[in-house]
Image 1 (cartoon, one colour):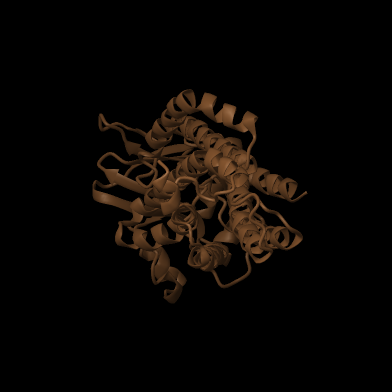
Image 2 (cartoon, rainbow, N blue to C red; image 1 turned 45 degrees about the vertical axis):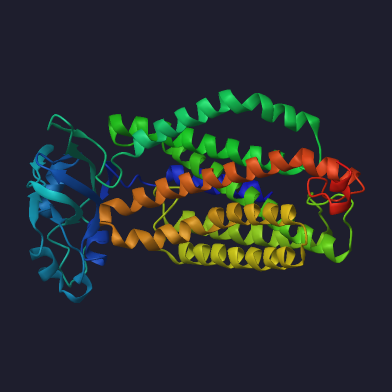
Amino acid sequence: MFHLVIALTSLLQCLCLATGKTVSGVFKSDAAREHTGQYITKFFYHGANGLMVYRLENVPVAVQKEARLLLFQEMEGFDNLSCLDRVSAAQLSVSLSTVEHNLTIPPQSYPQAWHIMYTDRYTCQEEDVDGALGDVGFQITLLNPDSAGNPLDHFSAEEAGLHTFYFLLILAYFVASCIYVQPLWQALNKGGPMHTVLKVLSTALVLQGMSVLFNYIHMARYARDGVGAPLMGSLAEFCDMVAQMQMLYMLLSLCMGWTLSRSRKSQVKPLQWDSSPTSTALAMGGVFTQGALLIWEQFEDTEHHSYHAQGSMAGVLLMALRVVLALLLASVLYQIVSAERSALKRDFYLSFAKGCFLWFLCHPVLVLISGIFNEHQIEKVITIGVILCQSISVVILYRLFLSRSLYWEVSSLSSVTLPLTMSRGSRARF
């Protein structure tokens, strides 16, 4: 039921207006008057020959309204300006008097954000506006220069390079699957003490790969028309959310299960997935909390990004939750390692801790580090960094559980807990 709610939330994103390089909608005088200008979108232009193209559906109404598009490079401090001062502060102004018009953006020495806003003669009026005039349908296309200098690139400067990154990541997934899918399939069919963990890890990895594939399809379409495939973007976010919840449930269940099993002095099958009502309840509580914050974040930020810069309250709470979970796991693992006498088991727990911390802390840390980068680089740094760090985390956990699976299976059946660390008396016999 919970996954169904998340699926419906993701699919709702498809109905939202695309905030990007080809934007369609309606210019409304009421909205422009209420917000001192109807905000349309933002685009990072770079280099020379940047272009904005608009198309209108009801030109006579736009002319009668004296409709205009205003372009701003900076929006800071606008709340302290009067309506007329805001309108006059625009760097560029375009009268909406033709069906179609091309506007060339001044050359940019470095990538800069341009904000587009709609106003008309009613925007700064204090009197009530009688709704005698209709709305104006529009489509705005924003283009950066391509490698040849022609204005044909739909990607904003903050998205440039992500398309190539997703392609290379898909290629890496394909090569890795060709190499490792057979031994992994054999390990899953064999069973053993790590069977459940390997199944959850494999499912999370498949979901991550599907998310990357859907993002690539969305951006490949986006490169052609500036709209992309919003359904693919929503499915990518959905797959990522499910993977996040599965990993959280696994990591919390393992840590809590190990702690509870140690308190019960049950060492017959060490380091397995030892579920209990208490550990399951704690893990499910963390999963539901994270799921609720992920859904809230999707409603607050309708752009199709799996990893956001966390400017919303939901995003801040989500990062705080991940930090708290990392501290909780650190506390649990510290107690286990402190009481463990076996050097091999301590190494196991420490390697497990590295994978956990990398999974939970990469996003908050990258958000903090991104503050030193330029505005157009923040989204790319967070997206690429989180995907790579979480992929490395899954690889660490894979290697850990695959390499230890046979060993713990044998050692649990042996009278000697750690056959590789023999006592001195045993060594004397060899």
